[in-house]
Image (tube, rainbow over all chains, first blue to last red; front, side):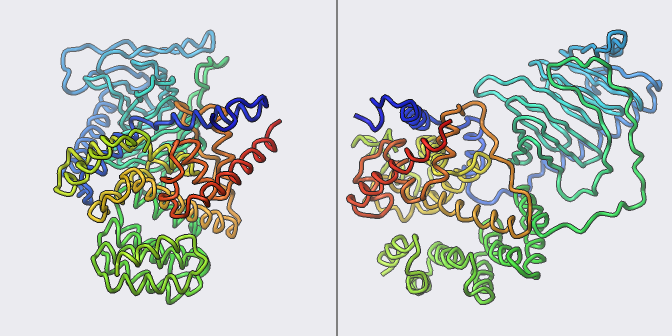
Length: 385
Length: 187
């Protein structure tokens, strides 16, 4: 009989139920597939030529949108066909019914392009039920497979919960945004893409890598100049507002540099993590090296992390060991000392440097007699003998 | 992990490892698919937050792949993978503590609660995860292996690297601790 199985106590029964539920947990199918794409070939993924092509396509689309905006009469927004569809006449403009204060949603179920003018907004529903609010000066494209892409501007999406194993995806520049059911905003300005999540979790993917953005947090594509914040009005998913949102005043982007406060050590560390997550280990290394030159716990943490970046994404194990040795010389009683010792040991083992690994393992056992890793290291030392 | 306790599957695991060592991608994929759910479930129960689980699973399998050459087949493949996963989850836990410590030093707001996966989480499971996170890591690992993974005590002893009597002792204390935490958190 299993523990708590026949208990009469409500708390105990709940606990047993939760343990049973935990034993049935399988994880997200999409995540499983994504992990497989990353580990199928364990070598570092090179920057694919497709990346360049995508940027070129994005730039072409942005140019096409800009050209279309010049030709199209001001004060109107309309569905226009993408470049590949030449004969389809434009659909009638979306007209929110202001008499009743509720925006009327147009259902987009064919390939096309929806574009709002400088002081206009549009409200549409995509195949699958996702509701999209377009801010002024925004272009949304539905491709031949009815997948949505934000070419430029800002949209707010409310995505209904997706069936198990399915996710709603859309693209913004070179990024793919995947959600299971949530509410979020997407900003696209040139090659800069931003995502602000209100509810649920959104995943931003590019070139086989992904970043998860939880509710209440924002994500911006790395290494772009900070965009001027735009004031926007958004509606709540599934609820019709009593008053139609007024036209939005978009802040003019000034060519004068906006003073940006000096980032904190934690922000710099986070930026390094983002750079790593997006496949820019060299940039992450630069940031960490800058941080390590400082003092305090942030510098210590960065000094340790430099070794990890050198060893794993940059595949420079000898430099990694040198970095951890620098860490150990500088922080002989550091909070990450045991981690650094283990990292050096693991790297030496992986490199086949048995003698060095043996010395490291003996040193570890001497330095960390109380460590919970002791039995593991002792076992390794036995194997190395 | 659970499906591989029969001798037949142990044999096929060995075959898989042998084929993986020869660079057979198909075998590597089979091995991944066979164990990915178990790794996810195990690291989830060991307190790896939802937003880190994907990366953690990936790192566990990369560690498995890199270490396949050193797998001597003395233990079941599942035992060996659990050891790697437990070690990795422990390391992530320590890093998380360092981050929280750094955050506290810099007077930063604590990070928001881990986002839940709406597809799988119920109130009971969320409560269990919270309680498990409060437990001593050594006791938690034993409890999770026994109560969630259904692993026999002798195998748990091999995963955590201690005598079977110690496993029984940790399990006893872990159950008491979990029950105490659950009752304390009950309305």
